[in-house]
Length: 117
Image (spheres, rainbow, N blue to C red):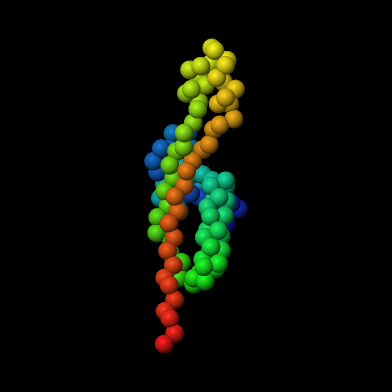
């Protein structure tokens, strides 16, 4: 992820490639299109650091921490509501600042240390 932020390694795009530009670094992955999603990489790095610090607080072995599942879902957006009520101008102020982007699920497991015998 640090290489993605520094633009040393690209993330290949194989699906949903409409409008994604062609980059030479994508040849390493046998495709022609890719990007460097810096914002997503930074957020994922923060989540990994948070999971590691949570494991340290709970006295778990951070070396045995395993990421089991990561899922990103699109959150509710009020763009349709504001477009629908655009002629009224009354409900627009209510929804103008409310546009979250995504919900992220993150499951990490740590193997518990064996008790001393």
